[in-house]
Structure formats: C-alpha cells, structure tokens
Image 1 (cartoon, rainbow, N blue to C red):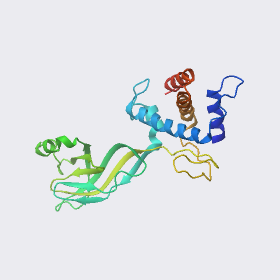
Image 2: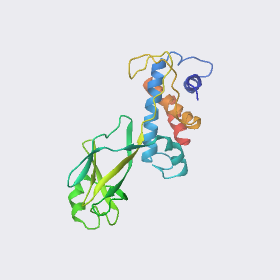
Image 3: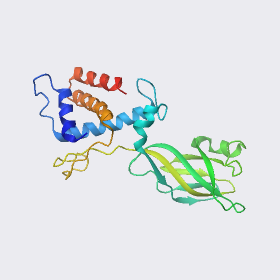
Image 4: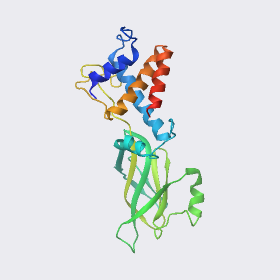
Amino acid sequence: MNNQTLRLKLKQRLNKLSSNDYDNIENWQIIEAFNKAQIEWVRRMLHGNNLYKEGDELSKRRIDDLQLLLTELPLTGTSNDVYFESNNFPPANYLEYKSVGTDAITDCCPDPRSMTVYLGEEANVNLYLRDPLKRPDFDWGETFCTLIGNNIRIYIREFTIVNPKLTYYRKPVNIEFAGVLNPYTGVTSPIDVISEFKDDIVEVLLDDTAALIAGDTENFNQMQRGQQSAERNN
C-alpha cells in the first residue's frame, strides 16, 4: 500500500462524515503513530495477546503474517572451557529471540555435527551442567544456551562450537514520507518508504494507528472503535 493511500485511509478512520476535524494532523505524527502501531501489533501477535490467543507460529495465519520478520544471523564470539559467548548480539534491528542452531566438532570427529540447542534459564545453568539428561552432550547432539548481558552463551562439554547461528524476529521497517521530517532522525526523508506488510495487515495497523491518535487527542469513541476493529481482524 502506498503512503498516499495510507494517509487517506487513516484520515477516513478519524474524520467525522463530511468534516475535516483531523486534517491538521502533522505527517510526522502519522509516521510516529503508524510505526508505534507496527511494533505493538508484532509484540501482541508473537505473545498471543489477541482474540484467538494465537502466538508465535501457533497457527497458519500467525506463521504467514510474521514470516517476513524472521532473520538469520551468523554468530561470532569466543570460547572457553565451559561455553561459547557471542560478541555480535543483539543486532540493531533485533526484536525477539526465536532459536539458536550450531554445529560441533571433537578431536575424534572433525566433521561438523548438527546440535539441538535449547534455550535455558541463567538461574539453572549449574543444575543443567550437573544433570546427565540436560548437560551438553556431543553423542546425543544436544546442548543449551542462555541470554545474559546482551550476549548468547552456548554451553559446551568436550566439543567445539562451529557455525553458530541465531534466528530472530527483527523490527518492522519504519515507514517514511518523502519530503517530511523523520521524527526518529530529525532529518527530512528524501524518499517514500512504504510498509513492508501485506495490505490486509496494513488495514489492521491503520485501525491501531487511528486508535493511538484518537487517544492522544482524547477522542475516546474513535479510540475504542479503532481498537475493536483491529482486534476483530487479527
């Protein structure tokens, strides 16, 4: 959906019939509200905070709607006797963890072997390392990782990590209007940047955007209408 249509649809959601009550909304305000609505919508869908309680990959619709945000990142870092620790996490566009995958090698098995990596709790690391059913094991092809201090730690035991990779949900690309001040950078945008979501999702995001702007201007009837319309169509 192009940005001219987006602006027309948003004002249609806000204006009363045959009035121009909301024509004085600044373009930068529309940009800020729409981009905020994108982030809030993605977080709700990933968490399952919607009418059908469908979170990350719990239905075909959630998979289809969110798949374009899934991104892979090769991890770099250093290793000691206990774990491999990344040094390039989180990336600038990081939104939510999905999974970590890696291969491993040993002195007797130099060919990389795929490992299953479970996400564990930092508080339980010592328990995992002592538990023969949960600790890293090359023969079983299993290990675990934790998130701490903006780093990923993949735990090892008599093997070496190779080719670690993070899969994560990135932030949606912010929309921009050509010739309009970007509220995030303070610089006038030279080109139009349209929403990367499908048009049917943009329609839902427009209802969320209208609800945000209506709430900011204390029009609670329009705010409620926008929220209800967005929720019905999720």
